[in-house]
Figure 1 (tube, rainbow, N blue to C red):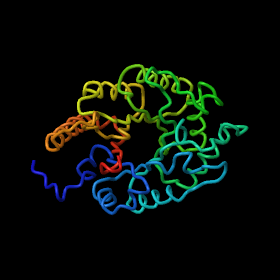
Figure 2: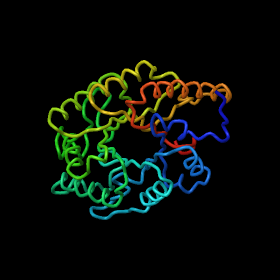
Figure 3: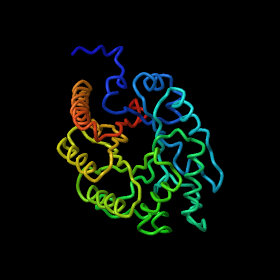
Figure 4: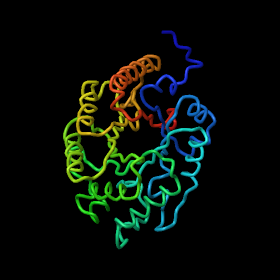
Length: 289
């Protein structure tokens, strides 16, 4: 098959299989080259930082909506599927962090979720909890675990499910969750949620990958394991590091190696498209990834 790379649109090529998305920040939305790429090639969109707690509610009850509003208006104007990122994370919290002193953190969380849902009702899913597990499978220490207990991830999902309709997907998102103790911890968490009747719909594999790691077989095994556990998979923050050691390399050889890596991972995604909610790139240009 011959492809005209000047006119082809990724979103049309991939339409039969899954949505193709990108994360974008306010700076990218002010860049005509970035927005041109988004409009041409993508049918899904995620905010980079504008919906994270410390950005959107830096003081208790005081919301800064401007960045998230810009994201939402751009996405709805261009008929994109929109996804929220994120409700609960141990990073990018308010400074000073008033969450440490609120009398009822779960009630504060519920109000936060309801406020964002009411303002952005067209979002099709949310990262309810982001990066809660360490690589060894234990829970990260944070204001959430300190105040809500070690079971705070379940509390967060139950709280989100009490606010958001079933048409809004609830997602757990993490990196390096293709194998090892973190993968097993997430699978155990999903099984526990299912047993307790706590809704979880999607697991996000962030996919901050290298040219040779993780292996295609490891990625495939993880997709199959999450599917068997009863959830969809989102490839949620895909970017591939060509030169992690910052050594001098040939641009041409790196470009070819990067193209080959994207080709092999997308071949895998297409093979398992029935298990994948969407594939989302972390930015559309190097300067935004």
